[in-house]
Each structure stands twice: as C-alpha cells, then as structure tokens.
Image 1 (cartoon, rainbow, N blue to C red):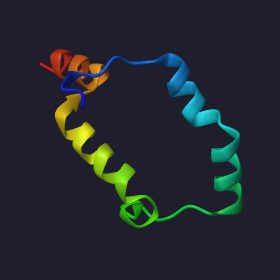
Image 2 (image 1 turned 30 degrees about the vertical axis):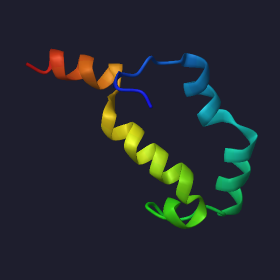
Image 3 (image 1 turned 180 degrees about the vertical axis):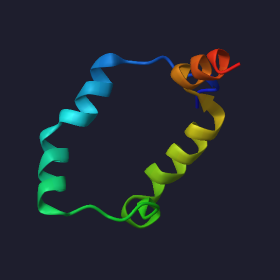
Image 4 (image 1 turned 60 degrees about the vertical axis):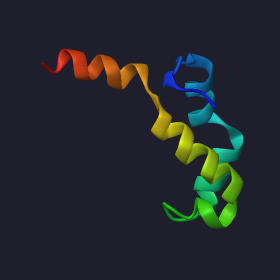
Length: 68
C-alpha cells in the first residue's frame, strides 16, 4: 500500500475518461449508484477506500498551497 503523494499519470487520466467500457456503460445506463461499490466488488472498494485515505493527490496539494 502506498503512503504519501500520488504520482499523476496523464495517460491514465485520459484513458479513464475515454475508455470504450465507460462510454458503453454510460450510454446504456448500467451504472450503480454512488457508494454501491461494496456490493459490486467489495475487495476493490476496500482497497480504494484505504488508498484514498492514506495518499494525497499532487493536484489537491498544489491547490491548497495556492489557496493561501
């Protein structure tokens, strides 16, 4: 498990928003409501919850610095 600042990946950011799987799922309306990750894939949901609480995004860190 990673702790600290996450290293951003431009390829992953673009890929997550333009994947064929995402386009099909959004067009057909096959999305589960927010917070239902525990039902669809509990192992992945637990990992993501811990990962998001133990790491910080580089972009949010920059945003906090310049918000002063």
